[in-house]
Picture 1 (tube, rainbow, N blue to C red):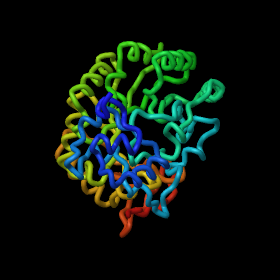
Picture 2 (spheres, one colour):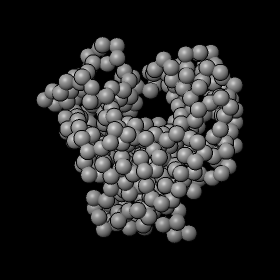
Picture 3 (cartoon, helix red, strand yellow):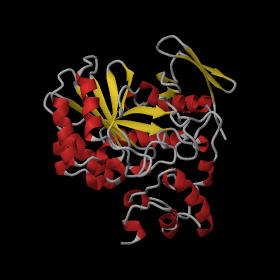
Picture 4 (cartoon, rainbow, N blue to C red):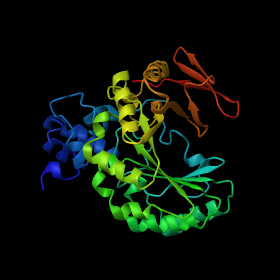
Length: 351
């Protein structure tokens, strides 16, 4: 098997594929020792090794910049742990919970906000006992209307485990929505099989899938085919994108991406401002720049193609739309009023 036919998981794999110079081996090894690395064949095939600013490589190939941590960066940047009543469950909003069912992904994004918690070494797949504890909490909390499956990448579960989980959730009458967050249909579309699709169903539940993609080149013919299989199965699809310096921080790229989403029957949902995850400052940009960019984007697009531009407030205070009247720009970031009326000062943490 050649390097282009397998998932790349090490510095030597990346160098052998031609995505980094041999002289960078020591740096790549240092980064991969701290943070997980994986590039699927589907994503590797898109990388232009002759382009130092390639938008796909920039998302997945480790760099020395990841070894620099800004003072404001946090291992748990959005406060998952402070809102976790039982292992693997995050209850930040009254009517919905996150269930972090797996700790692994098919690819590892260099800007991941859970990078300290995912990967073959750092990630944690829920044990049977932990999953039962999470389900017991959901059963005992009738306010929970939606369960959001994440991780890691929730689509890394086998069809057998997905079916078993859906059968468990089907027995909880107050849960009406089951949402899955994933990159799999884009980065490993071969995993979206008929068996996989059939396992996603549950009686009296609406299934929604959140698709993470950041650049229009990611929506390959194979990805579009996998996404079509999902939508043909009657599953609504919504998008999640991270605004990334040097990758999609221009209106033409975002315009093309949002149009591609709609053409693939994905409703643009969230465009995330980069979280304060360790070693990710080189991907972030000033909030003011992001707001101006998204306002320009919205002027170009039909209403059905406009994502909201959101920030997850550090400290588990939840998401806020950066386009709302609750945000006031300052010289070095913004002041934000959250849903409870509290004022937060957010400062741009840039390299």
